[in-house]
Length: 471
Image (tube, rainbow, N blue to C red; front, top):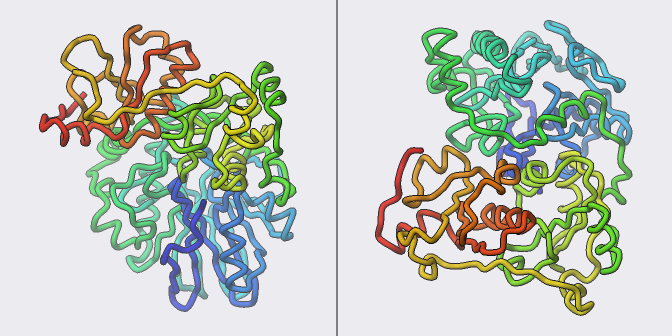
C-alpha cells in the first residue's frame, strides 16, 4: 500500500507539504495545507486511501486536485476527488482532457487564498507537461516538477513512441534549464522517484532543491543538448506494457468508483472459477512464492502481493481481461483490489472463496512448480540445463550466473516458444519474478521448469564462483 508520510513531511517557510509515497510505483503525491482547512493534492493516484488518511489527520478538506501531466503509470485520482469531495481539478490545457477541469498554460496562475500556483510549461516527459511553482507572495517556495526535474535525474522521454523521443528529449533538456534558473533554495517536489519505471534516479531521496540538483545531478552537467540526450536515453530501460494505453484512459478520465465496493472481491465458488477460466479469465495467484510452488490452480499466473504487485499485473496481463484472485486468508483483499484498480484493471471477477483449501477439497486439478535452493541446483556446467534469468537488463549486466540466458520477465510471454525445450531453472533477484516467469512458461505448455529460491548473488556465495558482468 502507499505510505502517507514515511517521515518526509516538510514545513517550508511555514507551509506544510506532505509527500504521500507509493513505494510500489516509486511515485510521490503531495498534500499541501492551504492554512484554512483546505488542502491541495498534486498527482494523486486512483488509490486515494493514503491521501485521505493524511488529509484526515490534518483536518483538511481536499479543495484542489492538480495533475502535472497525463500519467502513464497510474490512473489519476483527480476525477474521483472531484466527484467525492468537489475538488477543483487543475491540469494542462494542452492535455485535451475530456473531463471537467481548469486548463492552464504557461504562466497562468491560480489564487489558492494566500498562496498561488503558477504553471510552467515543461514538456519532455510528455508533450503537455506542466510544473507548478508554489508562491507565497512574490517568493517561490517550491516547484512540483512532476516528470521533469527529479532527484539526480530526469524522467523518461520515450513514452510517446520512438518517432517522438528525440524531440521530447531535447524539450526535456530545455525544461530542465528553465527549472534550474529558479533560486537555489527552491524546493523540488518530483512525482517520479526511486523504483519508478518513469525515471532512473540513483538514490532513494524523494525531494531535493534546485541548488542540490545543480550541484549533483549528472544530467545537468551535460555540456550541451546532444550530450544530455545521449546520457538520458542511455540510462533508460524497458517499461511496463500498460504504459502504452493508460495515458489515454487518463486523458478521457477514469470511471468514478463507489469506494467501499471498489475495494471488495466477490467470493466465487470452485465451479464458477472453472467456468470463468474456460471463458478466458486469468487466475492471478497473489500468495507467496512458496505457497504457489506447493500447489496452484492450473494455468494460474503467480504475482505475489507486495508493493510492486500493480506494476507486474499491468505488465503481464492484457487490459480488459477478467481476473480471478487466489489469496491466502491473511492477505488483504482490499489491497489487491486497489492495486489493480490504480493501474486500470477494473475487470475483477472476484476471488476463489476459501482459497486453495476449497480448490483441493473440491478435488480439482492442482499443479506445482518446484522451488530449489542453490544447494539443490543441478550442475549448471553439464549443458543439459537451461538457466533463465528474467531480471531487468541493467540487473543482468551487473552480474549473472555463467551461461545464463537473459529474457526480461516483461517480454517472456512473447518469447516463450523460442526457448530451448529442455529442463529450465528460472531466477531473478529473490524469486518472485522468477515464479511469475515459471507460471508463464507453464501456461505455454512447459513442464520441466523449476525456480531458484534466491538469486545470482546467492548462487555465487554458495558456490564460491564469480558472477559474469556485462551482456
